[in-house]
Length: 89
Image: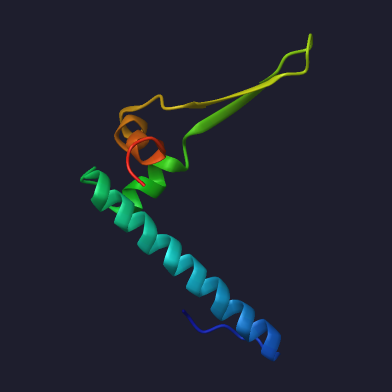
């Protein structure tokens, strides 16, 4: 937590809560990376995840929506096991 200049108790508590949740998410990602044995750091996983694209297609005939996440590059392929809910958890 870096210094922030909030002056109301509610904003101070909200800032501390957001920092705690962000830290918890970071540590959980770190745990999953270790469990899946990808050999990557949290920073590298986050950098690769920023460039992953998900597309949604809605069919005009019946309105069905299909979603597909694209793992196109080598970086994406390296972190794909982290997105697979069937393995572990």
